[in-house]
Length: 351
Ligand code: AMP
Ligand code: MG
Figure (tube, rainbow, N blue to C red):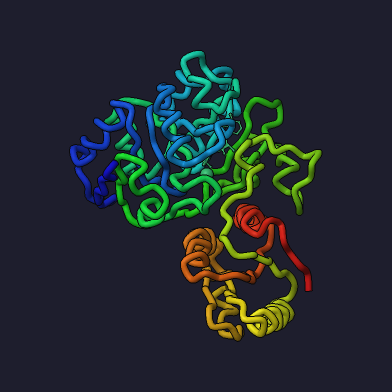
């Protein structure tokens, strides 16, 4: 199939420009579109066939559920059940925005959308193109990230095309996304809600609205543990991973720089291709031909936004050994480190 690539200026588009994409979605086809977090791969959330096509296009295991995207808070009551007062409060505080909530699913939501679970994940995006697409198509859009299964999530249309060209009907190219890591997922089926995937909406922000929440122990584990089964099925897979072997080095900046420089020297001496993932503050201290700046430590948002593009670039340059600095695991840093550890297969050293 030929994939249509359509540019949409997120600040100045007319809704009619989205009509072709809406037609594709209404007739059961797939359209990748920008959201504020990452690009999503959209299909009709209430159609079993569309859900199957999404799994096929991504090469995704069929037990890994999709997130349903809605354009209006009222739609939540149509796809989910037992929406608690806490959930309503979170929706009012953070929707539209990068927060996904899990509820018991409504009858009409097919099991093929929820990966066979009786629960459903729902989110209302704030990106103008995503919101207009859902509203105008008149359907709920099931959308996981628009990457091939296991690869870093796409933060630019080019990333989607890299993975999905010829596999889906259309890509709406709205440029680079703002946040760059996936939505925070909160399981609202427990009395004390549980964060299953950290994201831009941090634990602190959520607790300000509804009081105590927990974090799924599988999320904060320093390594995958057999007895800790992630409640968000997607979190159990190796993910976001570049092809090379990635190591996260943590400690004081000076020591980290020295350790990475010596690892680079050792591997280059063996004729291996190395790369370093550094920050604005440290990049000039590395002695490696390929030093990539992920963003500034003064602005964690810039680091989240730059992460997946850099992980993809590691593959483009054929890096065999990748050394990355680490980040403090609080607020947004928790989401960043969660993704980086998974990319590194939990391979980290302290110096
Ligand atoms: P993606 O948008 O690609 O990050 O995929 C959506 C992710 O949401 C999945 O990988 C799951 O980890 C999570 N998810 C979706 N639905 C549920 C659910 N019903 N229960 C727990 N986690 C879910
Ligand atoms: Mg994903």
